[in-house]
Amino acid sequence: MNIEANKIAGAVLSTLLVVMGLNMVSGIVFAPKKPAVPGFDLPSDEPTTAAAGPAAAAEEPIAVRLAKADPARGEKAIGACKACHTFEKGGANKVGPHLYDVYARPKGSVAGFGYSAAMKSKSGEAWEAEQLDGFIKNPKAYLPGTSMAFAGVGKPDARADIVAYLNTLADAPKPLPKP
Picture (cartoon, rainbow, N blue to C red):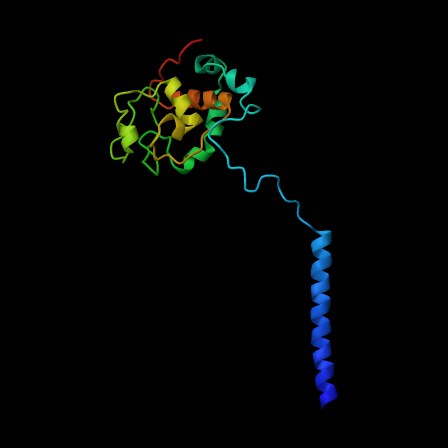
């Protein structure tokens, strides 16, 4: 009986020895590189010099982009917007207000929609091309405190297409600014 106990103890100890040996070998083979500075780089609100190079500074004014904008492309570009907004005349408010006849409409003026305090504070202003472009680009940066969770549309030409399309959503579309 003593020999059987020795065999079992030897098997357990040799198994532990093999596992420890494999752990040491794998630690040597797959050793992680230690960073020079510990921690993670967090994204910042400030653009880096590579990302904010000439492309960001060379964005054309909305009036120039509207001259070559295509409302049909704008209609296709609003696919993500349809999750929260309606675009039909008499359309119901969803998570966001309906956007029919939004161009030149006073901000925060759709009856029955609960606007954020930030949007209510701008109720004396109208949604003109420049304002729509800025809001579509980055709602949170354009109007801090807005409840709109959409990140925005980064492409300037796509934003111009969307503004041109939004202007067509009216009984009588307003004249767009000329370059």
